[in-house]
Image 1 (cartoon, rainbow, N blue to C red):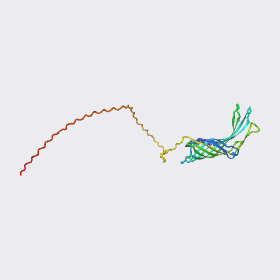
Image 2 (cartoon, rainbow, N blue to C red):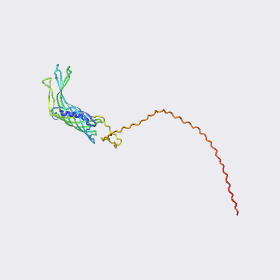
Image 3 (cartoon, rainbow, N blue to C red):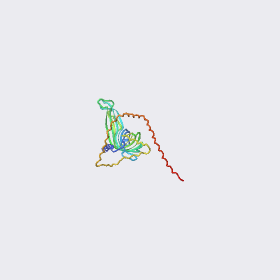
Image 4 (tube, helix red, strand yellow):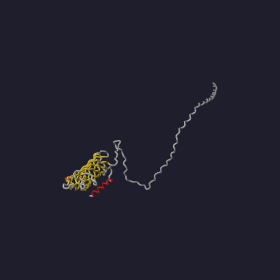
Length: 324
C-alpha cells in the first residue's frame, strides 16, 4: 500500500512548482452508493463532504479549447450507524447506557482533469484518478447520564481497511462570477476487499444484559459511486479584460523573446552628469517707475526766405546797317 500512497503524496506537493496559470480550490457535499457485491453484503449508502485543489492548465492549447489540469483532494463519508440501547455497563452502580456502531470512509485521490470549452461559461470535463481509501468501523459507548470519575462517551475502532482504488469521473462547470463556478460531478471508484460490521446484524445479546452482538462481514470488492455538488473558487489575482476602442484590434509590438546576450570586454563608463549651476535667489519684484512726462513742444521760428537779385539782361548786339 505504501508503494501507492507515498508517490501520490509526493506528486501532490511537487505539482505547484510545475504548473502555471490560475489554480482553484473546491468545496463539495458528497453522496455515495455501494455497488455490486458491496451493496449485497449490506453496506449502506453514505454522505459527507470533500475539498480539493485543482491546478492551472498543465498543457497549453493555441485555441484554448481543451485544458489539462491536475486535481487532488480529501473525502470524508459516513455510511450509516446502528445503536443498541439499555445496556448495563460494568461500573460499581451498574449504570445504563448504549453503544453505537458506525461505518465510515476517508480517502485521498489524485489525477488529471480534461476541461472542454475552456473559454466558455459552461465547461464539461472528464478525469481519471487513483485513490487510497480507508473503510472503518468504530464503536462508541455512551452513558445515559454523567457518571463521576467516568467519561460519558468513549470510542474505539473495531475494524480498519486501507485499500487502493482507481476510477473515472465526468462533470460540469458553470461560471457564476469571474471567481466562482458551480461544480457537479459523478465518479465511479473501484477497489479491493474490505471487512466491516453489518449494521443490520447489530443487536442486544439476549443472554447477557451487558453485552451486544454484531456480525463481521467481508466483501470481495469495495466499489462505490460518488456524486459531488459544490463550488470551485479561483485563487490569486484575476486578469483584467482588455478594452478596445474600435472593432479592429490595436497593433501591439511583440515582446523581445530573443535569448541573445551581448557582452563587452570593458564596458564604457557612464557619462558624467553636467554640472547644474546654482539658481540665484529670487529678487523681490518692485513696481517699475513711471516714465517722465515729455516737455511741451515749442514752435520753431521760421527763417525769412532769402531774396536773390535777378541778373540784368545783357544788351543785344546791334545789327549793322544794310547798304543797298
